[in-house]
Length: 115
Image 1 (tube, rainbow, N blue to C red):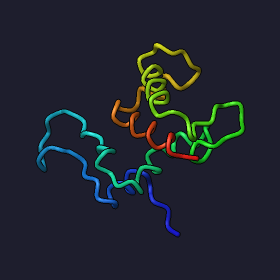
Image 2: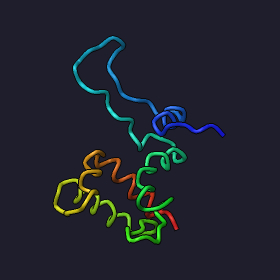
Image 3: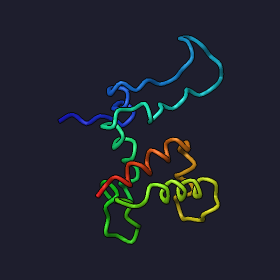
């Protein structure tokens, strides 16, 4: 089975990246693909970075807390608190800053649905 990079998987699934007209040089970085527009099957590719510490699908028995089955609102608020710096952490505050609030909401929804 051929492995596909996460962004390529989103693109292959039909998620478009918002960008200016061809040849346009507005000086702005291209926008990230909107995860809400991605098919549900593409979401696990987007949350795969979380698997490194929290286990596949958020299921871990390590010292790092599992995310599977936790309350969606709790996860989302916690991720946003890490992002804003309101909640201290060793690494999560740095990781959360790399995502939009919409992406964090998608992550929270995904992990809350895992059993």
